[in-house]
Amino acid sequence: MLYQRPDVKLLCGVDEVGRGPLVGAVVTAAVILDPLRPIVGLTDSKKLSEKRRDELAQLIKQHALCWALGRAEPHEIDQLNILHATMLAMRRAVAALSMTPDWVLVDGNRTPDFGLPASSVIKGDLLVAEISAASILAKVARDAEMQALHQQYPQYGFDNHKGYPTAAHLQAIAQHGIIDQHRRSFKPVRMLVQQEP
Figure 1 (cartoon, one colour):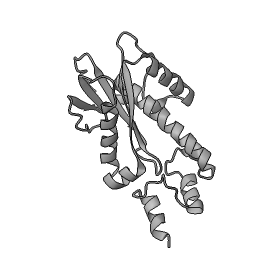
Figure 2: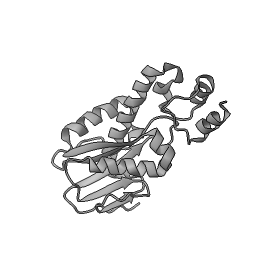
Figure 3: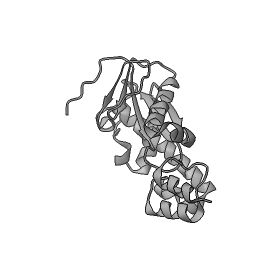
């Protein structure tokens, strides 16, 4: 798989976490790494242990030229659909950067309109250090939100399944109903809402 890195000074990587869950925001990150302070071990966040992700997230925050998070809330996901909400969250992350990148690389096969030169890279979280860094920051941030939600609603088990539609999560929804943070447009939640009197 050939990937041509743009020859620019400020290259920004963007990735998202949380397209599949039934609960919570979709969280994105944008990162411009410092070529003079490389970070060893960057890769797709899903291939790292939680401990290693946390360690790398701290290094990214310390060594990157700049980084920012973006998000789209459950009600925005319900209004726009998950794809458009993800694109919105990505634009928010890039807009929140303290520096304007020369080029934006996005993980996947779609690129939102950032008003900047941009392109997408399939498996970018494995191939591009900036996208790897973004995937790590987004994953650590969203997991922390799921831990916080677990403190509020321990009966749902958000600390384990992170809001994904596991059997345990679906059982908890059936037993306890839905909370404000659930995405009502997602089928398992929508079907439950339709059953409510």
